[in-house]
Amino acid sequence: MTTLSGVYEKTYRNYLSQLGSIDPNAVRQRLGAETEKDEVVIPLFGKPYRASPKGITDISGKQPSFDVCVILCKYLLLCPLIQSEEKDWVSFRGLRDSGPLTTYFANEAEGAIAKYFMGKPHELEEAGRALGGYTPDIDARYDVSLRFDVLPKVPLVMLYNDADKDFPAKCSVLFERRAEMYLDAECLSMVGRLLFSRLKKSDAK
Image (cartoon, rainbow, N blue to C red):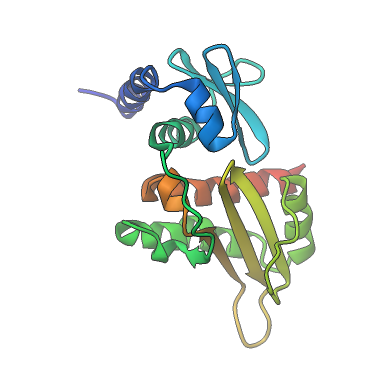
């Protein structure tokens, strides 16, 4: 019987084999990523990773978590020939093929952030800025509003209002419309979950 870890490993190896068909120079030109020999260096939430058919590693040479590997592989493989200029902000629900994943995203990304940081807006602000978040260029009247450059050409905006006597804590995560050109809905849902896990880790420091 194939174990779950075995399925992950098979999926990972399949993605790596597909990376052998990409041109690092084309990726550099289209995505603005750095290249070193046959490797592409990609920042994910500001942390650099190296990607090649040999594997995905962080700067210390360690393989990151499975979700990070999948996000980076899909980002490189989808690398669109024509760059989209659709930069209007939309909810996860408004992205292509997001339907089956909207509940997951609401619970594991937006809901998880709201629940963990309820009553702690200042801590959320500090954790977000430590993660590379900065003030977004949008009219946002929220207790906390931060923009994150997830990947080159794939930003997100996190909007948070703390609980009060009338309303519970609420978090909304928005993507630019063009995000669906660079990552599929499954990977974008992983990005939302990764945002929560890294904010939580940053807050714990």
